[in-house]
Amino acid sequence: MKLKVFFIFTALIPFSFINAQKPIILNEDSLKVGTNKYPGISVTIPEVQYEKTLKNWVKLQESGTKSKVVDDGGKMSIFGAFSKNISENPVNILSELTDRDSVLKLTAAIELKKDVYIERATGEAELSKAKQYLFDFAKEQYIDLVNEQLKLEENKLKDLQKELGGLEKDQSGMEKDIRSSNKLISSEQDELVMLNNELTTLSAAIIEHNAEYITMDPGEVKDEKAKYIKDLENQKKKTVKSIKKAENKISKAENTISHANRSIPKNDDTQERIRRLITDQEAVVQKFTDKLNRVKAFK
Image (cartoon, rainbow, N blue to C red; front, side, top):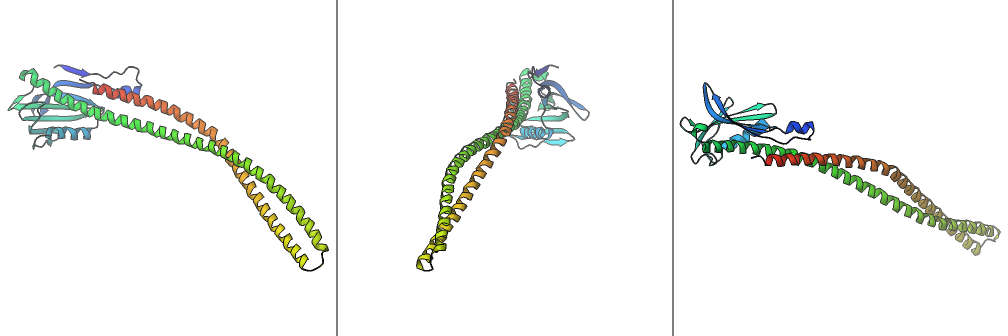
């Protein structure tokens, strides 16, 4: 029997990737059904899942025909299958898919007409077509699998990039908070100077007018003085309230700055860690991209 091996280059790839880099092996083989043994072809498909591959194999055989695949204890058969990639005429296919740890082995015996199975004796052209039929199926399954692996790793990379973007946005926000808080503190401090001066003036005026009020005789003028003093006291209360409000604003802004100054270094460290993870994940994505390109290049 002749053996055809489609190798995937594995040099300089970590062990986990080496494990994944197994060849598709196409082999002239035989298929035993009951007590009978039929000439056939086998192909090994690395890594793929049994149930999904079985479903796709059945679907491929049933494509273009009303015939259905019959599964008898793991041995499949379909009569009147039609594929121009094998023959212009309908063919019968006996097959078996077996799970061999990290690879699946698909063996098929293709009957061109009664008791005439594709093998080297029936002609190189028919044998070559049958081999290509099985190889194309195996390659498609492998490509689909590696595409899924690549998509999974790309999604991991996108998640890391999204996380980094969030951290950068947070840091930008904290830096903006520091700038706006410093600006607010400066503004409120200027306001406090003015308010404290106003408070000093009002306090002095109240003391002065109270002293005058005490010495005044009862009457309309004294009542007007009392009303004026009350207005001064209300202004003082408002000024004290404004001072308290400005002080609270300054305190809040200072807390914002303090929190940001503590958080930014932690954010920087986390960003650096995420950037290293992104670099590592980009390498993983590239390896799966290379793996996919190698599988696509199989002939």
